Length: 200
Image (cartoon, rainbow, N blue to C red):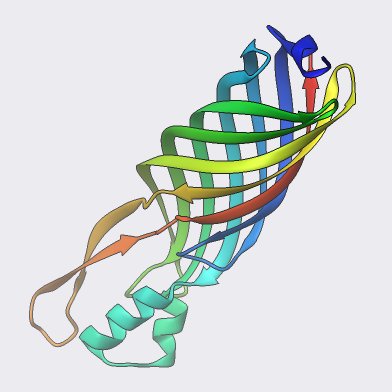
């Protein structure tokens, strides 16, 4: 009875949690979701998330070592800071299991903007800036508990998939022309989040 009261309502949700993409170490992620309930069991809308991390790109270190030889400066060359912004259309299906509790499955598809600060190859003390894009998708499940007529708390586990990338060239120090590298940021991974949703 309680779940059906939300039908045709708009909603806003804030999500906080932990995201562990393949490209970087795990860290904090925050997100916003705006949606409308099509009926008491189906919600559709959009979401925007922000994930930030500074780390050493181990794949790039391996690529540089194999091409030019190993050295501590390669660790500096691979120091990277990323700001990841997935923007998605989302849909959620509810399955009430108790008067105030529901299980749900959720999914989304959209685009991803990755803002990258990285070190210049020839002058590793200098920073460079790049923006990469990719399509993305997401699939997860969770549980929600109604706090009152217009609010609920929830927890969810989600798998996110995307891999923004770009190519760049550097002069080969051995005088053998240019070497092309592809920087792929595999942002695929699992996120675990809790949140608060309001209906209006």
